[in-house]
Image (cartoon, rainbow, N blue to C red):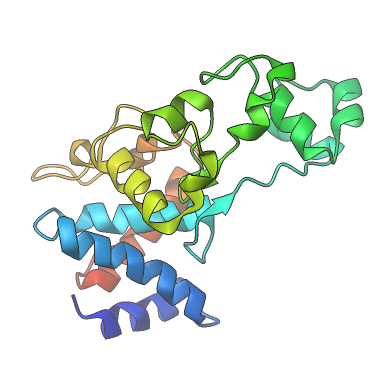
Amino acid sequence: MDRTFFFEHLRKRLYPHGLDQSQMDGHRVILDEWERNHATDDDRWLAYILATAHREAGAGLQPVCENLNYSERGLLATFPKYFGIAEARAYAHHPERIANRAYANRMGNGNEASGDGWLYRGRGLVQITGKANYAKFGCAKSPDTALVHQTAIRILFDGMIDGAFTGKNLAGYFNRTTADWVGARAIVNPGNLADLVGANARAYYAAIGYMV
């Protein structure tokens, strides 16, 4: 891959205000992992991996911890199943309490009092959430390891290539007969901003060196 072309193209398509050093480093570690272990795989997979990290972790492509500092309105919009008006008012701007309520009794977590919701809140490049998901990637005993860059990259690649997140994998959406840039969102977060992630993935694919 011509990385000079890659970054020049990204500046035109996705980073019109330029790429800082941290953003370039975030891309480089993903490119390094791809070239080291997946160079013979479909480049569309790499494009979609990059676009997913861009969406889930932000434009810096650095592992992050989920921000749960929601306002009352934010709670009602994001977690309407778990917060009514009274609950949203009581929990607003209390991230730990929000996590413990919103993520209780699911994804392998205990009840609200267990503290699992906060302990296993979203982390990494794809925001793995819940005790069961942390255990799946060997991080249940030390959840913060999901913020270590190499661990976060391993989770990102294994989850998307092997289908460990939702049971869907990249090969099901990008192969000899298929290129489903929108449907591939089901690999990580079905339906959520699928058009945007798909468009960004196409931009990454063009940056890798192809016209799409």
